[in-house]
Image (cartoon, rainbow, N blue to C red; front, side):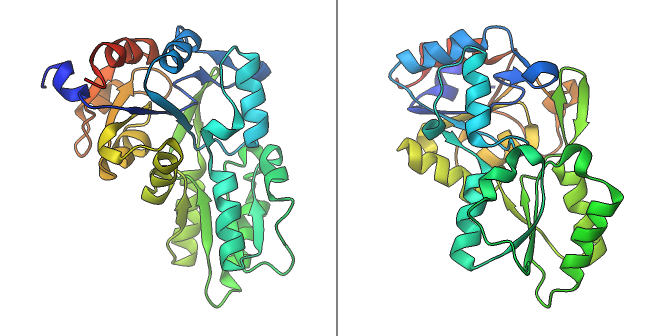
Length: 270
């Protein structure tokens, strides 16, 4: 690999994943990953622009920010690009009325959306609500539509909580795709549109930005396909095999967010 100075030259904006990079969710809300609170604070004191880009879909954006603030992070709702608000925008623009298969914690994001006589299904990380009954109802809703529309808030395979790895929305999305013979529309990482909306909000071009995440496909691969650089942290869902992934190679691998910030402050924006 090229020297860090070459890999990070010209970076003006940093997109941060949240779960697995800032903290691990779990009992009592979760725990910060060692060094991450101070790492975010150091980034924000620097000349670099910072934005948070998450696929979190078990909590509303407000609840997520409140949790992170309780854990000590300097973060506001306006700094977070999240899939639920972006999905609401899509629904309004296209006149879509969703059947929701989502976690109760994120349902409030859809309060202003007409849900009568559904003409699409919106899928998020519903956790325990991914029962046979609820999945079958989503399947039936799609099969009854002449032009079935399935919108998925991200397509992650799994994520990490303090108790271990947890199955994510992507597995259930694939099940409905297979059963219905359709392709889901993804709102969230790795969707290029989602990354571009985060870049626009941050005010930097793709070649000036770097993504820091724990997901080799959703964070790293998705960001690189948009023209960004990307670092993978060895925290959260990271697996040692990620460093030898057959399709995606990060621009660098770091032990944690603190190490990434050390390198960025030393080499970026030069």
